[in-house]
Length: 274
Picture 1: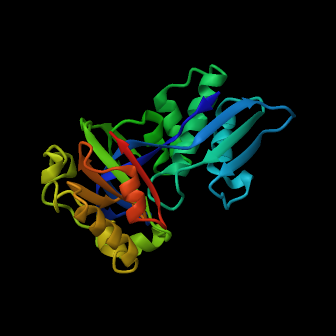
Picture 2: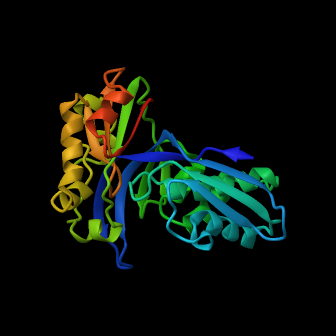
């Protein structure tokens, strides 16, 4: 079985409050985008489950990879036979694009289908939530309003078809703990789910990512990417999640992949029509 875990972007991100447990309540809209890893799951040749990675370097050992954690989490619910898993990493890590979370959730979905386990999306999402805050989103893999710590999901009607997205991943990465450390939680005057109903060209400063205020001063290269995308004609640009990737939304075919690659020759870039 071959699967193609995709990235996500955040359309706005409000940090609402710090919780007694030390985490934060947020409000964000997550949307899938077609930048993919490649995941293959097959019955094991031997007697144990294995993970083989290729593509972008993976720094953690296989047993700590979210893919293996996903296998073990599902195995606790429904005993599984061993499998061999092959993961080709294409989505950049440390980018705020949810690549590792997507790999984990697609592993759950793939195992569910491969072994005809008949688990519902809700049951898979509950398992995914134990792996990471972004993981439940990738079980449903459609636009979602994400609240609480990011694991409370509600479908939201957003259609960006006809736009082109340009994604740029600078060489720096932002530790999530550092990004949160310098934020000031606040309740916005208008809820995000109302703001994103406006035309994208009107989002401007209203649909904002609260992490930008804490990240940009420490990582000016990320701020510069956003400024560059806006100067290239993006109708809206934002950092995704806690960074470090930045995306720009362009009308129609107003941007081409080679133009973005030439503007950011040292960074990883991706362009696709939505």
